[in-house]
Length: 365
Image (tube, rainbow, N blue to C red):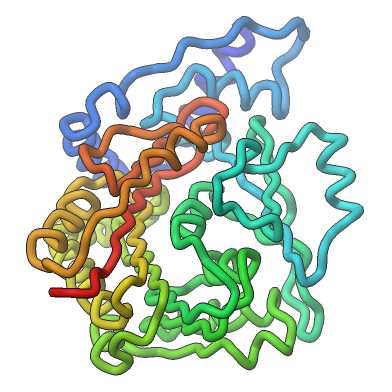
């Protein structure tokens, strides 16, 4: 009864924050596209023997009673991973996290999982305080949605490679790339001027001076980068502008939200143009990874299918094994693609949405 009342109170509070225009739109689309993966409520675990449900215990129980849809609309169930900065390693924090029951991401390591990358997470919803930006001082960790690391790992980064992060702000994936390998050249591009400042500050907070010399930050239209730097890069990440399901659900301006929804159909056009630019920038034999933080099939599978149908020099790379290896920490919905994965939030694994697709550029057209 206590849990029921607390859950009901939490739902009433959250209902005031959720944008009904967006939720209604998502309900209609995702119920059709994802079916049970969107709607089905997980079975609750047996209640622990405690007298009052508070704090993390309550949050865990609520998460266990929520569907993927409910987790997305309930920030109290969200989880945040802690990516360590190898350039200012937090040894004391690591000891503390171990004592609190945190574990490292990808305990069953991928074949190409870099030992230099350390990311900790807990199955209980919790959030570390963010570190403040201080000029001249490197931060020790970066808070992120753990699913954001999947596209970075899919790149299979190696020391000395030339890498392009085409839509780089706010910079979390660029920081993660530098935890994986020392690039010969890293080009971080962001077209939006406000987000560009955020990107620069993130890089300044995590990257030591010697590495700054191999990093270029630009404010180019991503659709033009391929023509400006043709076949220059070994690896390209297109973390494309997308519907961003989590943030859209909590839009404070309903009129602005309605406008976003009406313009949503235009996003796949932009995403396809960005990937086409990335294909031009990629050298033959190089890898391209596309990612979004939406569940939308039109922005995910349909975009990749269009690229594969229109580019004979791009071939899909099977990443099903990656899903099997990561199943301990992530839940995946079917995509109908060997080259594509879709992370959906589930109880105790409140990561995503995150769609990831991996392609390779062939030597001959």
